[in-house]
View 1 (spheres, helix red, strand yellow):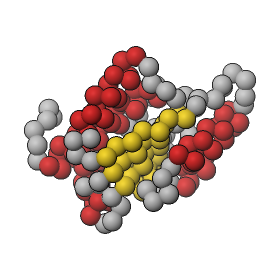
View 2 (view 1 turned 45 degrees about the vertical axis):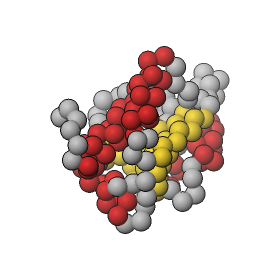
View 3 (view 1 turned 45 degrees about the horizontal axis):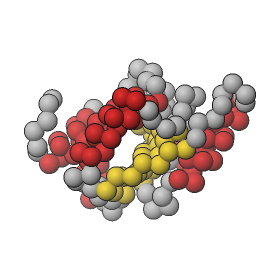
View 4 (view 1 turned 90 degrees about the vertical axis):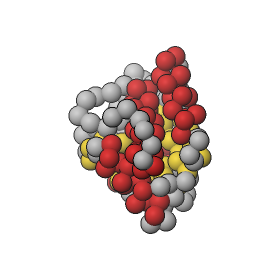
Length: 157
């Protein structure tokens, strides 16, 4: 299993997504170090889609730890994983020397193509379009579920 996890995301959480995120971060930190890096969301009403994605990609890239195995989340281009598959994948990464995994979550417009190309893997949380704040909560819950599955601990299935 991994020993360190970094979540790099566009936007600051507020309200119930912030509370949900904090709850899962607290749970995960019982097992390993988890850090969250947030970058500012670009104003998509004043700039083109390409300009927004490029600016956010630049900020996200600067927050990525150099030694981390990078997994970006993209609904359309990513590989969907069942919870059990995610657990096995994180176990395999840890066992193969990739003990630090960084997950990248984009903003409302997604992620720039260069971030997708530069990642070690591209995953999807499923076919549904989720608001980026909710996607972060879902990702954290799925990482937590993966840990519980890997450890053989009880969790609602």
